[in-house]
Image 1 (tube, rainbow, N blue to C red):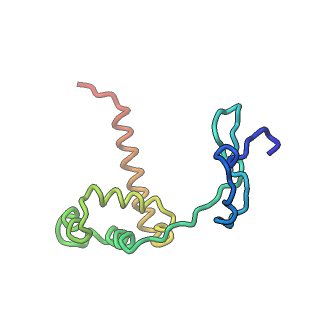
Image 2: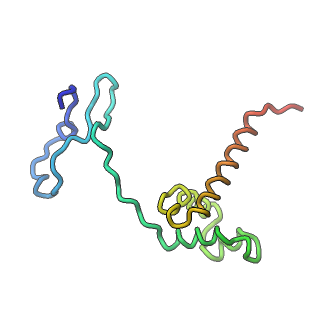
Image 3: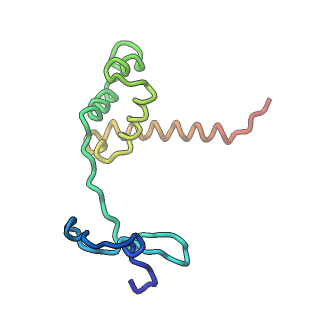
Length: 134
């Protein structure tokens, strides 16, 4: 690097024997910028291969597609079908809704869930902004 950056490996330490254990070529993945005082990445961003949806993720998406046609309250069906608390279910659902793989699997359901989440967040934020008068 000619920009005054320091090779990350020289900061981390000795790399002897790494090439034999790893087939990756030596390349700078970041530099220390003395002006910013932090480590930043100046190399093209490496993309991690997306994780495939698990069977449970697919079942959750399919359940969200048709849960209102099931008899009984949604919370009890979640406990029966997935053996999860409703809190854990909604944590998993939030992660699923954020994933591109889920969007590719069922774009209509994921788009609907994203819009619903955005609407609820917006309503919660607007309620926080309004002063309470009594």
